[in-house]
Image (cartoon, rainbow, N blue to C red; front, side, top):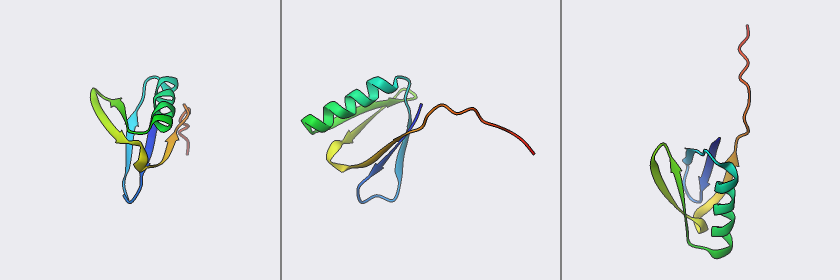
Amino acid sequence: MNVRIGIINSAREIEIEVDDEKAFVKSIEDALTGGGLVWAESHGDRIGLVVAHIAYIQIEGDRERIVGL
């Protein structure tokens, strides 16, 4: 699952690959209610996100790519 996270006052967005969508959404929801920091893992790297600076989160669904002429 591909996830894009927009950060306040930043032109760039963070793009990560998430294996367990439900666990990721739960960790974000828990962090939003408690404030502070949420950790995400992508390709063996850990990324810490300050919840107060998250502008948006986009979770892409699984799509079958179509190639045609």
